[in-house]
Length: 108
Image 1 (cartoon, one colour):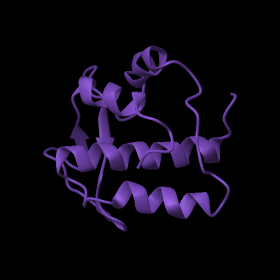
Image 2 (cartoon, rainbow, N blue to C red):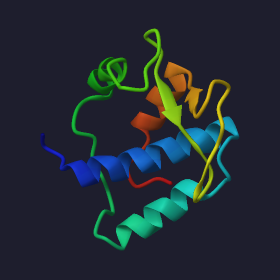
Image 3 (tube, rainbow, N blue to C red):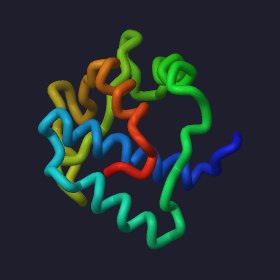
């Protein structure tokens, strides 16, 4: 537990917005807007608490995982969750998740 809960949630918000933008689900610029807002609270850069490989391994244990497949809640835009194919969660290719996790923490 090297990263506090609030910081972990903040990092997740930014990372999921990046995923949504890449998939064309989330309005472009949303990740940057979230990051700008969070930086006002002193959360400028949120380092990953573990290696990308370790995080990828842990994602399968997430409460939103279904049949071993990681799923994410993605925004359409700030304040609006995008409906997925099966409810509110979206399937995201593991390769894209890994790509986004490997990006610099301050990139939006």
